[in-house]
Image 1 (tube, one colour):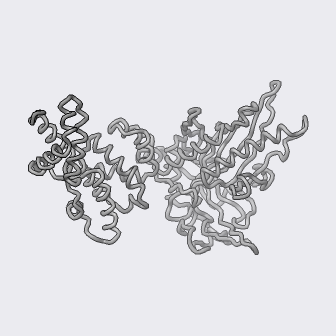
Image 2 (cartoon, rainbow, N blue to C red):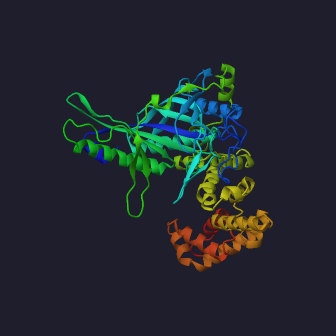
Image 3 (cartoon, helix red, strand yellow):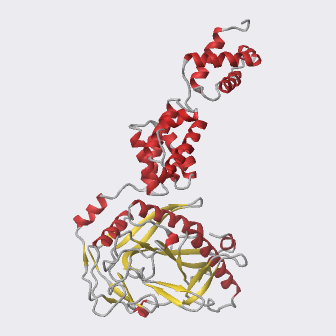
Length: 501
C-alpha cells in the first residue's frame, strides 16, 4: 500500500481481470493463423470479420489450453459451460459483439498464492472463461485504421476477488500468474506483445463512525506491462484518496465509477490515468446466448487427463532444486523465470549424467552469471557444451578464468560456423592446465626460490603464507598449472625441506 494511503488511514482493495492469449496455431472460431504481428489484415476470413452468413467452429486447441490454465490454477471446472455474445461498438470489433462466457464460465473458485515483503496472500480467483479478442485500432494524425489480424484470437480471462492491497502485490500477482501459465504451456506471456493484459479495479476505503467512507470502484484498462500496472495503481490510489479528502462534506465521489486509461511517464509529465468513459453495467452489453455455438461439454475423465499431463510449475522446481542440489533461492528464481531457462538447466544436468550438488551449482552459476550475460546465450551455446565446460572445470583441466575465455571463443566459433571442439579450442588458446609432475615440480621450485620470505613465514607457523607461493607458482606456469595439484605439491615440498634448506 502506498505511504499516502497508510498514513491517512485509507485502505485499498484491488481486483484484477487478466486477459491471457492462448498459444494456439489458429484463432478461436476459425482456421485463420493466430498471428497478428504481420502485414495488417493478412490473417482474416469471413468468420473473424463477422461477414453475414458465416458460421463459427470452436477450436479444440483453444479449449485444451484453457482447460490446462484452469487446472493449473486449481479452478473447479464446469462440466458444461456456455458461450454468450457481449454486444458493444468498437471500430475494431467487426461483428459488433464479442464471443465470451458470461453466465456459465469454464471454471470458478481457483486460487494463486503470492508473497511480498509485507505479507503472503492466497488470492481467490473468482472465474476463468474463454473469449475471443477484438482487432486493433492504429491511430495516425489523420485517421484511425483497423487491423483485424487479432480479431478472433483465443483468450482466457481470469478474474480475482478484490483482495490485493498495493501496487507491489499487483506486480507480484502478475509475475506469479505469468510464470504458472508459461510453465503450463498456455501462453508465451509476452506482455509487450499483448499476450497478457490486465484490467485493474481500484477502490479506497476508510471506516468512520461505523460506516465505510469510499468504495467507488475505478477500472484501469489494458495494462500491458508489470511496470505500467504498478505505476497505474500507485497513481490511482493517491488520486482517489485526494479526491475523497478534498470533496465537500456529503458530496459524491467526483466522477463516480469510471473506466480510465493509463498514460506512461514522459520527460515532461509523470505517469497518470485519464478518463475513458463512465462504467457500463451488464445490461449495457445485452448479453445473450450465442445461437451458433453449442455448449462446451467436458467429462471428468477429460479434465483429469489434462491435469495429469501438466508439467511441474516454477515453485515445485525451485523447491526440488534447493533440496536436491542445495541451490540458492536467487539461482532457482533466475533459472525458473521462463520455461526455456528451466529446460536448459535440466538439459545440461541430463548430459552430466547423475550430477552431484557441486556440478549442479557450477551449472547454475554458468547459466545465471555468464550465459545470460550473452545476448541470446541460451540459444547459441548447446547444453552439451556447457556440460563439457563444467566437467573440464571439475577435473581441473582448465581454470575459471580460462573457462570464461573458452566460452567467449566458443560463442565466436559458433557464430562463424567454425570448429567447436572444446579440447582443441583450449589447446589452441593455451588454456589447458598441466598436472604433469615434472612441470609442477619445476614451477614449485621456481616459486620457492622467488619467495624465500613466504617460505620462512610458512615454517614459522603462518600457514596462509602458502597462498603467496601458490600465486608465484601460478605466475611461473603462466596460468597453466592446476591450482589444486599445485598446492598439494607445494605443501609437500615445504614439508620435505626445512628452514635450513
